[in-house]
Structure formats: C-alpha cells, structure tokens
Length: 377
Image (cartoon, rainbow, N blue to C red; front, side, top):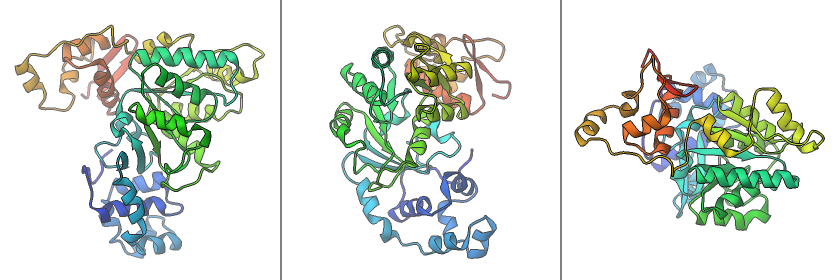
C-alpha cells in the first residue's frame, strides 16, 4: 500500500483536515483510505464538487467537506498536546504497521499513555463478561505465561475476562493495552477507572478511534474489536457463548489473517460453546500459553540471549530496511526464528515485529518450523 504522504508531524491545519475527514458522515475508513492512497489530504480540500461527486460523495458530504474550518477541531488538537496524550494519523510513522495493513484500519488513533507500546508484539485476550471459575483461572494462567514470554496483553477493558487479563498482566509486572469503545476523556465501564489508571502507571496505554468526548454506544464496540485484533499477532478467546461479542473479535482476526486460539471448556458449559465452535471452524485449541508461543514462533525472553553483530557487517546490512533479517533467509530452506534472532543480532521481540512486517509485504512466508524467503524478495 503506497500513501501520498508519510511525515512524522503535521501542521495544526493539516491535522484538522484529517479530523475533518474522519468526522464526515458516511465516508468511513475504507472509503477514506482509498482516496488517501491516491491523493494527499491537502489535495482533497482543493477538489471542487464535481470532482468529489465523481468519487461517490453525496451533496451533504461535499458541502460539509468544503465547509472546512480548522477552528472546529482546535479543542481536539489541544487535547493531543496534553501530557501523555497523542493523536496519530494513518500516515504517521508511529502508526502501528500491523494495524495499518488491516482493511478498514482507523484513519486516526487517539492514545493516552505510552504511544510506542502499540507497535510492540502483543496478543489479544477476550472472553465472557461473566466468566466461570474455570474461565477466570484460565485467563489468569494464560496471561501470566504470556507476560513472562514478553508479550504485551491487549483487550477491551470490559468486565470479566478483559479486566482479569489486564489485572493479571499488571500483577505480573507486565504491560497491557486497553482499547475503548468511547472517547478517552472517559473510561467505560466507569468502575474500571482505577484499573485504567494503573495501566497507564505501568507503561501501558488506552487507545480509541473516537474523538475524546465521544460517549460509549453499542455500535462502537464492534469497531473497537477490530482494533484489538488488528494490533495483535493473535487473539485468544478464553470463554465465549455462541453469540458472544468475543466472537466478533475472533472473526476480525480471521479476516485480518491473524491467529485465533480458543480454550476448550466443559461440554455443557454455556460459556464454552463459542470456543468450541471456533475450534470446529479451525481455531487452534490451546491448553497453555506454550501452545500459543509455539504457534506464533516466539520463545520466552529468558531462553534467547541475542548476540551482537559484527560492526562492519551491521553497517553494511543497515543500508536496506530489515536487510539483516532478509539476508538470513533462503527461499529453499526453513529458518527457525531463534536462528534468525541469533544471526541478526536483534532481540527476539524486535525480530518478530519485523518478520510480521516482511510477511505482510509479501517478502517472506511463515511455514512450520520458521520462515522462508519468497522468490520475489
């Protein structure tokens, strides 16, 4: 995907244009993204009604777009200037690459807390709002082991499995991301305000695509779910009924070509039926975090000690993005991730992030046992 601009920062007027596009009724991230692949956003504001109509805009959208005033968005821009508050537009280099490659990715992300964490290797954990004792125990044990493996835990701050996963990650000294279905000037549900504050205190983040003062609404939560799965290398469903909202997150993960994991439950447990259905449809049945770690190809941080590349080799290989990884892969030979990490001299977490990006670019393939380079790379 080639975009017309890729700049670390924008003028206030340019950022206001991004906010203006997001605010237009009926445009949405998919339609907006198609335009921005062809035109810089500063070009769009120069289009006349005939040009905009040719791209499928109706009269209301055209009128509102051309009635642009940066002053209408000044309060939101000021919000982004507050300490630990950030606004990332789609073209910003800090916008997470995994999410950028999702169809319908938000054109704007609002973040409170550690903005860099959203590009780190993370796994989504979702499940029932009213879990059984088995479900609570499973969420806690999986979260503990995944945190020990160096993964960031991502969820939706909802009651039940979401909150348990956030809380357990924090108790284990890990970091976690909460994606909200409302603006970040509030916390939903409000009973989790203390939990949200603790997430921030321990280096995590709150994330939303909604303007800061936006109230929670039912239709916002499926949109939130696609961000949860889109930020993550995989989604773990701990407990879910057959019509659970957690299955929406799992469906998004499948559409986004991410891994889906499901914890099996008792046959007659209503809260396990959704997980059983996912397993029947191809989700990986997991009994512990080791099953997940094996599938996504990482190892606990204590297992791999990265070596340091020779300085001359490092200088030569740094000419091209990710070349240290590409040069250690062959099209006719499977290379394990621990070998890639050791020979590249990079930490395993960084290697995983870069390998995911290379796979999304079509330069490498994930296969049983590791990775291979494509013929076109």
